[in-house]
Image (cartoon, rainbow, N blue to C red):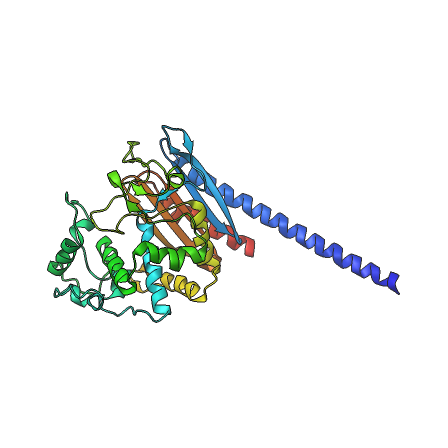
Length: 380
């Protein structure tokens, strides 16, 4: 009897082993095709000086791609742990704080900003809400938001005065239009700091970065020459930033802001750390279910701009043929950053470059659609 049982058991084990081997080969083939798509698009863009770091999340795994130099003069290559300026990708983290606050009942999207900052008493600004700041429908458009750029910087009191004095130029009303506003997110920072009585960097660390295990993401203080103030071992991982023509701009760790008060500089991170954010957004890989819900909330479209474009909480929706991309670009004159997701198929990409005007659009319009077609083919 025992000998009779050995035959079917052995057959089952062989079948299971064959199935596992087939799945492994399929995963390997898919990984190779993903690498081919990404490499074909990114490699030509990594022009000297400067470089590009990328992270791609697909099939439950993160793959990294690195090109060029973090510092061309020193011949220091880009790695997955190289630290880049995230520019406006930082807005995703403020948006997550707002979403998490609503999940925990600590604030509401329809709270007026004056509820937290009573010094905001201007006719227009007094009607703006937290939700309108976070999805760029406040209508605010200060001189610090667009060229011609001002020559001066503004302290906190001057910023508040600018907001109180501001009047819409074209009949805008709070909540009625989508106008991208850097100033709106600086104001959002002040609202969050006032609500929680702690600096924005501390809020990021305690509520988002630490729970996600992101140990190489910081909003540092600005030191001399507008350079990030971080430990020497972290500064050694910082990129040198370059203008699009290859001119070096500022020292490694350069920060830029028209606002001269704490917390208004840029966030810095690595492709490896942002790979953790990709996983959290696409697979809910976080311990706290409220943070998981908050990340999902930030990605939901809340304002339809037109047939192809919509606005979420910092994230943007772009409807392409057969695929909807949810993404966020960012850039300065010496830094470019991009994160794009296709949640319906659970994959996404991060691009970090240490030069201005890097063509991140290739991710939105070429890499992500190509990956979507590949994964759709694999599924079917």
